[in-house]
Structures are given as structure tokens and as C-alpha cells.
Length: 400
Ligand SMILES: *Cc1c(COP(=O)(O)O)cnc(C)c1O
Image (cartoon, rainbow, N blue to C red):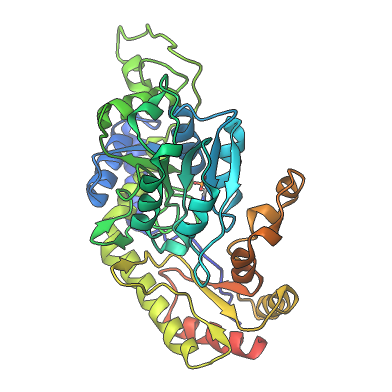
């Protein structure tokens, strides 16, 4: 029987050719291809600036560091995400504060964010779950209505904001649209992941996109982030390699979070196929899943159909009506026997041991638990055929 993986990378001759071109060029680390990838991603999203990095995790952490967020601060995020979103908050020394997701949705609830705001809140990190954009206007309204609670540290870039900074974890949502604007522009800082399982991959990689704000233009943020991403060195690798360019200064103790040209070349080829091949095929499979499953009242389909929103079709999360964790897990075991790889998005962050030991408790996030306990993410990737999708649906119905 045919094996159906969950989300294999979509690599064609175009990616291989672009990587080969880089390997033969004599320059393989951060350089011209990375610069080009940054420009192209910014253009695609309609953002002023993009910095390409080694991962989304690096992008989230650099953003928090750049804003001077750390000990004594609080950052609000969703429990229904990958641990990276919350781990980076802990890395800075700040406290993750979780706000529950919407009653019937997978994205953070603006009303829950409002309840979680305190005078220590410095940032909010919503996640575009499955590629479906959060309600950014509602989130901004909540932050704008509570400006009085925001006490920025004036020694840091927090001074450029008059409310907690909105940092989108857009790891899933490249290409998604909210009220006529692409993700990458919807929050103050917008972080994409190009990890192997994501819609557009560079094997490992990420990017942060941003626009100018009063007090600092986007080029300024870019320079600061670049400095922070490469040891705090005032010259990049390419500049240092030029003859006579040996001298450099470490301006601050930075990190090592740069993207390489080998990785960027995969991304350049992917981006050229993104709107013509990758997104349309994902959408087609998504629609077929929907058509096949919506007639069966035992399934709750993803609520990815609000007005003025378009998903990037990253996940197809289906919920099994009335099922608890045990039933859901048994259905997954049945699917696995049929060689169909499925997944769960996500084991809520607060249910992991590391977070339980910090005192977090899933019982405080009933919507998150409700969405998690009966959820299964079905295989969704360009190389699927209609027959594959129909087979997955048939086996899901049988297994349940
Ligand atoms: C994949 C993912 C990340 C982490 O991305 P990396 O590029 O692997 O660091 C963060 N948040 C969410 C929601 C993700 O799915």
C-alpha cells in the first residue's frame, strides 16, 4: 500500500539548480543570494524590510532582544502553538503569559489578551495557526485601548511604540491575506519560518519583516538586527572577505543567527513557484478535504473561512466531534496502521513538562484544550493527488 507522509518538502529541479549555482559560485554563506531572498520576500509581502535568519525561533528571539525585553517583563502569547513561541520569551528572562484561543477557532482571542494585559506587558505574540491570519484589527484595538498600561523602557526601542509591541508568529502563514494585506505586514514585527515542513522551505530558516515606525526607520531596525544576528560584528562575512577588509569591531555580544546563501537559494526557487504551484495545489487539496468531510456530521471542519481572510493552506486540522484525547489517539493509531502520517497541532505549550513545572495549568485554557483534544492534522502538501486525499478521507471515516 502507498505510504502517505505528513509533509515532505516540495523540491524540484529548480531548487537543485539554484543550490548548484550557489555551490559553484565560490560564495556559500550569507551574501548575494541571501540579500536577494530578503528583497524578494519583502516585495512579495509588501513590507519595507526583511531580514533572513537561521530560523523563526531566532527571528522571534532577536525581535524580543532588539526591543530590550527581559527580566521583569511579560509577553502574552497563545498556548496553542509550538514550544518555540514561548521558549524564546523564557530565554530573554521575561515571563510568558498565555491567553486562550477563540471559542471555536485556533487563534488567540483578543478578549483573552485584554484580560491578560498588565503594566508589565511589553509584547504580544499571536500565531497564525495553520496559516489562517489572526484578527489583527481586534488585537490592535485591544492594545490601543489599553495604552495607559504600557510603560516602555525608554533606553530601548520600546520607546518607538506607544502600546505593547505586536509580534506575529507567522511561521505558517506566508501568502495568507487579511483585509487585503499579506501576512508579513500585519503586525509590528512579522516572523516567518522556512523549516522543512513549512509552506516555503529553505531546509532551516526564518525571516523577520517590518516597516518603519515613528522614531526609527526600517533600515535602522534592519542594521540593528543584522548586528545582533552576527556576533555584534560591524561587518558582515562578505565585507570582511574583501581585500583589505580584515578589520572589524564587536559592538555588542551578539548571536549567530544568519542565513546562508545555500539555504537562501532553495528559498529563491521556492518563492518563484509559490503563487503559481505551491499555494494553488495546497488550496486544491484543502478544498477537496473540505468537500469530502463536510457531509459527515462527525467532523468539525477548520473554521478557516471568515470574511476578508485567506489562509495559506498550511494545515487541514479536522476535529472529531465528541472525541476525547484517548479516542483521538486511537484514531491516529489506526491511520498509522494504514501508513497515513497525521499530526496534532499542537500539544498545548502549557501541557509540556517544562511548562507544568513552571506552574502553568491547561485547565485555565478551556478553548485551547477543547480544540486540541479531538484535533488531527491531515497530510497537506503539493505532491498529493486527488486519490491520496480521497484515500485519507475514507480511512479517517473508517478509523473513527
Ligand atoms: C515551526 C514553528 C516555529 C519555529 O520555526 P523554526 O523556523 O523551526 O524556528 C514557531 N512557531 C510555530 C507556530 C511553528 O509552527
